[in-house]
Image (cartoon, rainbow, N blue to C red; front, top):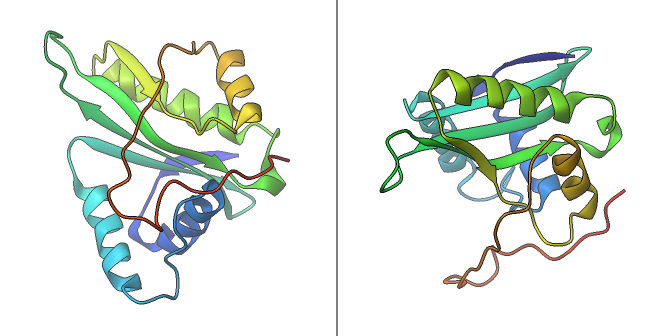
Amino acid sequence: MEIREARPDDWTAVAALLAELGRPDVLGGSGAEEYERAFEAYLDRPDTVALVAEDEGAIVGFVDMEYRSRLNFSSPQAWIPDLIVTERARSRGAGRALLAAGLERAHTHGCFALTLESATWRKRAHAFYEREGMKHVSASFAKVLREGEWPPQPQEEG
């Protein structure tokens, strides 16, 4: 298992993983090039990092992290919007390795905490985060402004 920084040519694999996570499937549809350009711009941002897990040359996992300033804190917060390992590769260490790489970078950037969000129905993922020493510390609320894209419909976890 190798963890490395994502590259622009990883987009197809990353987009497929995000769709598996419940994000809109943007591959092959109208505007596909726009989403690919957005990924490339994300990779160039100084306040983000995106990593992939490769197993035998195939991308099996992805994590991205943003360094966010928070009022009344003197150091940034590391926030993970996406952490996904493809179903066929789960429970083989990719998620643990991606999270560890994110934690290492958060420490390097002097972050006061690392946080992430996880859909309420992803019970297996929640158990993983707790095994990795994370604590359930908040609830997340959202007001959907454009129907159809989000939130994803609950799926059974395997």
